[in-house]
Image (cartoon, rainbow, N blue to C red; front, side, top):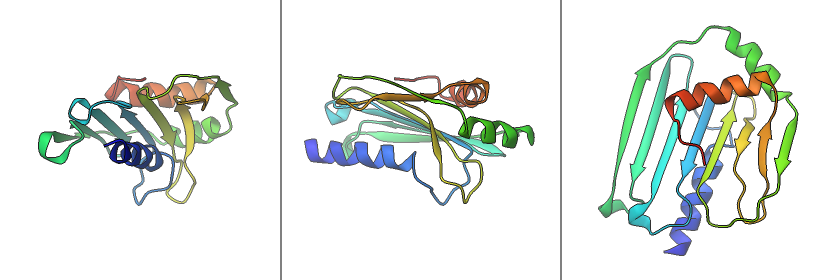
Length: 153
């Protein structure tokens, strides 16, 4: 059971920090941490130029859970490109974390399809520090994704 959860956590964390075949501008992923799989709750929010896709999973075991997908119409002005560029240059801060097995949140942004995503916010785990970008541009992007997926660990 621990191996399945560790793999799931790794996959969820990786999908929000590496380039995917999508063009999501901002992505937020929440994971419930180390928990009995049936009680697990995962959430993913992806902000595109023309839509928001929210996926939620209730229970992490295939036969004992379910998932939902919600797609919302959305449009964003071209000013988002300048905000993404500024946020990618924002100062990165870290705070220590000594808590293990806790829920996690990763918020990342990707200015263009061929750009490497950068982290806006990431909770730490087991000695890995919490990381966040400072500045108004990073805050705008975090506020945008939090509007659709409020939960942040």
